[in-house]
Length: 215
Image 1 (tube, helix red, strand yellow):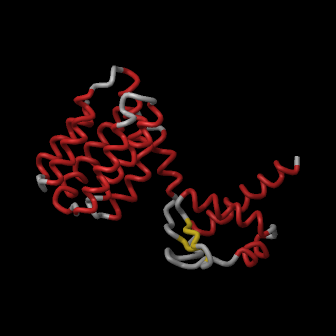
Image 2: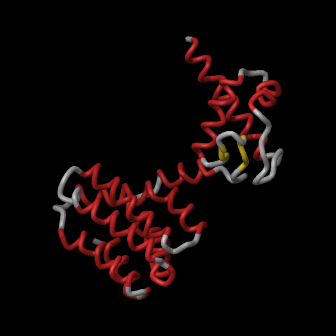
Image 3: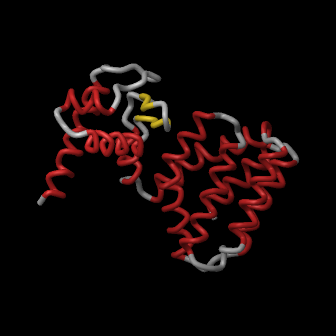
């Protein structure tokens, strides 16, 4: 019973803090009140405040800086976007990938650095070892690779958006891998994409990404 009560207090604290954020109590970038201050305002313990802040940090609303405090990251609750994405169909995911990944890969081909290419090839080698093995292990490695592809576009907005979107990509890839035998040609498209980035060929990179999405 005590655990349920504690959990209820955390949920209530999270809701109160979400409401204050929505009402404009703090601006993006503002340092939030300290744990003792919030505990006093909300009439709860510091431990409950700490747990509530962790929930807000996990959802992307708040950034906790060790030794410095908590800062408001956005006033738009990313959790709602995540919940909306979770209701998307495989076809929705495919369409969204064409819009996001194909365009991001074209930018990456123009902007990628030597460090980007090195990290991409490292991620590619890691995923190669799992392609014909356990699905879960491959999916984890493949998501790292795809995130690095988008990061190579050097557009923070795209990178952040893709972090929320990656769960939908993962579900789409898992759907494809479980409905048909794995094809080496599909993995080889990953290699060809990195080669196109190294040649700084955005059109080819985009074409290959569209082929990968449809594979």
